[in-house]
Image (tube, rainbow, N blue to C red; front, side, top):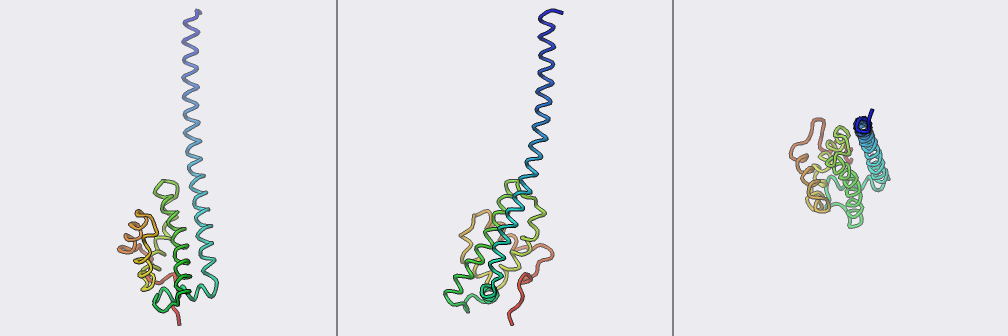
Length: 166
């Protein structure tokens, strides 16, 4: 065996090593992508839960229920608190939509948001708030919300996420 034969064997072994490395990197990338999606869902769920937890305060809950029915019946302070509650709630959802657009969030995890957005924003006060405040959100998210409001998904009911005030 001469030096050329040894060189050919070395090239063959190197090409197999490159192929094995590419397969390993492909598998690793897929695992990382799945882990990233799971982490994004957990993070978004935690952020969304924080916004809902804040709304559970009895005083804030009453303001949200009153506001979804009619923004005009809120005092300036109540209107401000209603705005913060709605903004915080919707901003956490916006992040999930952004992650989905980047391929880092599973579509099936968006369904609860797709049902709740029109359930809240198709109420009289929710619709008014959205029309006055939608500029606070990214254009692509505004378009997604508008599509949901025009064509709500199955299982949606206006105000369904909210009990009615007595």
